[in-house]
Length: 343
Ligand SMILES: [Zn+2]
Image 1 (tube, helix red, strand yellow):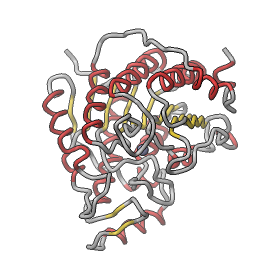
Image 2: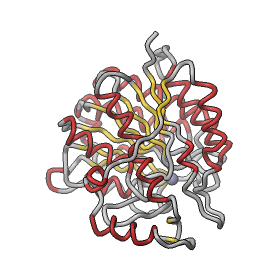
Image 3: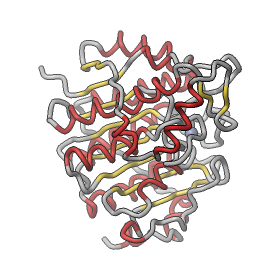
């Protein structure tokens, strides 16, 4: 039987490291990479990463920033680009492999070789802005992928869902003025990077194509499923994306100390099943998930495995969505509610 799910797993992602403690370190995915290789080698195609080219990166990031990075790369001592984002000997090379790992899967999805992909990469990307890295992120992997899909395959309706506990400020900035990429971010309010208010909705042609849903700490499975069920169904039906990209951050897990949201391990399987269903209905199953945050290796492993099991499952269960009054109030007062009240 043809394998329809592709993974990028590559031990070179472990090379970006620093001597002082950081939540974003190789141990996040060291055991996970071995487990995934062993557990899915029969059912998935596992690819090594390729390096993104300078042209791929420059479709998102400024030349000035790239020049800054190459200067810093030469320093032998630990260097903190900002408070969180470190650059060491192998950092830029690893970041090129992170962005390139996503492109490897994007190509195979676009040529029909795969239906779904999961890029198990690091460093993460969604905080990296065109002119600077921040929040552990050097290159904005999901943005580099979306720009590549626009350029290489002439896609003009790309949906990016970001369910990391933190706002995807970098991705928002890259696509704030275009309708060709619709960005939805659900994140905990009032934590790093302190952007992503509901009133940030895009500008110019992009007006209405950025949907921020800042949620309260203590929101968990019920609230998230209700919110994303309502929003995704309406947006997908009206926008008709040609591919769904996901900034899959796992730091909203209830056992993660970096956020106050209370998602369960199983929820990550559930949202994956929901996304698969929407991809099936609208874009020929094209679904590419890209790892962002997730800093407790135990939670991260369980949640990524729940995601991959769900990607591989052939069952198409109807997702049960329970009403949540707290989440409903957010939707009712939301400036982008025209998306979900038109029906
Ligand atoms: Zn995060």
